[in-house]
Image 1 (cartoon, rainbow, N blue to C red):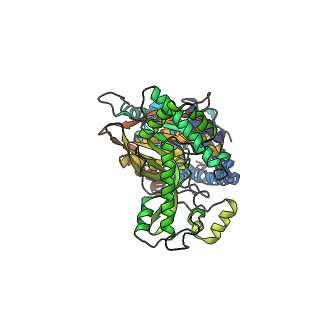
Image 2: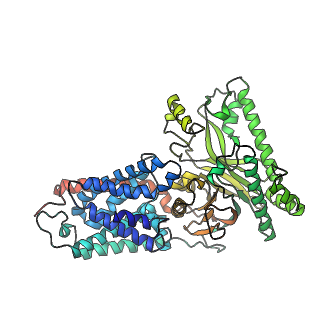
Image 3: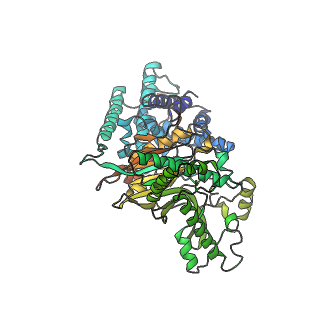
Length: 607
């Protein structure tokens, strides 16, 4: 329990989260885990599982705001990974010493749950994320990734455990469960090796180029100016989108905030290139060009008739064409109204307030018409003759035409996908009993890249699209950098989780993914935390209203940091696959080799 408590306290959002206290708590927590897991006994595996449950369930407790039973299942799964790590540790420690054994075994469990797809695996907070505020070590993630940072902390946890065993336990006697003097090389040698590893990581971090804004030899520069609009609405309000005037009020509120933000930027002489709204903040059913092309080609399509929006689509031969025409018309009408500064409720408080300031309204509307506009929305796509919807982000250019889109890579289990079960009628019927729709979204398989024209000269900046749950996975951010993206635009909705530590975890994840990819991440959220994370993982700007960064409304203008020509992705972007492969398999390969050469050695073996 002490190990789990310390690991929780040092994790992002924990009471000891910070540049130094957080990593220190993590190291001590890992030391306690090593001391416990290195022992044998009839209850050992059950205790290993319990330690994982007591860490994983509270770490992910914010899930309980949506589905409380999921917290229990997550804890059970986390415990199974811990059980496996304990087995590996007890088999390895006599061959290679406690520090290295702890580093390899704990890193293996974290990497294993990362590479196994959700919902069996879960790529979320790892111990390496505790270094998100410790710049000198955080920067080493550009070379070794979060997996490397976690390995470093685990090695020092093992070293602390070894020091405790060597100094606080009597000499080993026959039958003792932990033979402190059989744990590898001399203490001094293992301490020097651990310190050498720390020095190497610090040196790797120092190799990262300076941000160098406006410096001729800098790797990055200030790019497009973006206005992030955060309405600050609670999730209960979001659920009412289809009730009465709810949609109009929501859009008018965001338009009001957008116009006010653009007016302030215009007063300061800073033209805005991109206005960004959060996840699904534009309640439209958009048609992706792939579906439009398929219908124009009279292709035979498979329509999910259980989708409420598509019900009746097969009633006549021209129904698909009419659906596309209506959707495109609605899109053009709404986007045209927004860009013209027209409120959907002309008698509402927002419209009346701006009507009293015609000069300001005209000026703010002119700035909006000159900017690109991005918002989360649903899109319908076609792939291999099957029509599916996606949770995406669409981007419109200054002329009001849609210039691109992208959608979510990683679907939320149970809410956006049923792991393939949505193809079966019984599963769809079961899902509709729990929610007003069938979770049958399609996941993206490649980065959604959008060319943003910026400034009077029309310079093109390449943005990659990410949506909410994507923030928990590094693959999208690394693949985006490798595909040539200049930055990642993340539209997110964290209002589900009220004001929990999930907000802090999302920021910590973003900071390390930015370092690993070498690309800035711009977060436009519904209720917080809206921010820009620079390519060195620095939290450059964050929306704070009255001292709060979550469950608040406001706008944040940022100069998006983009790479200069010739600045490629961080090295780890192309190393990730090899790093995770080694983290999972190397400990088992070493164990097999050692036991082949030296035979199996038990922790509790007497002399």
